[in-house]
Length: 136
Image (cartoon, rainbow, N blue to C red; front, side, top):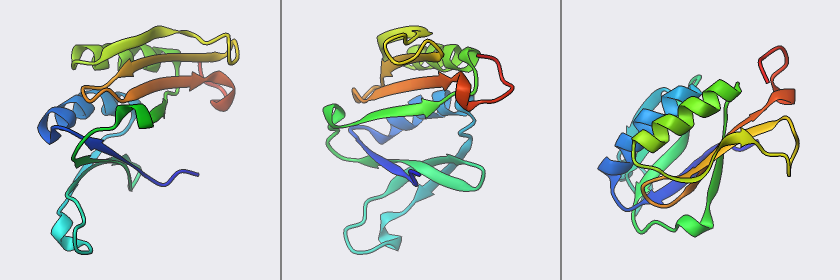
């Protein structure tokens, strides 16, 4: 199981504003700022996002490397995928592919993919077989 991820971003303020609009739709509602001086020497400042008592999605200032990372974020319904996609686009994302079934993976795999303001590939994913009793 993945515990956390750091994305290096060019502009903290722009990135925080983007993720504060998009992540809550996916249930990622907690925010935490970590002061790097509290860590080991040279530890970066971090801007964190999480849910259910865990911080797992972190931003750090620096030179973004968007070709190095693709992040798939869980959605519990196709409607949640649609909403996250709409919020991301309204917050300045660029489209990779609009919401829809991803038949090349599985007919029950519903997703949308965007690039965040730093160029990182984000995929909002609903795999109906992983959410028993929920809408496909």
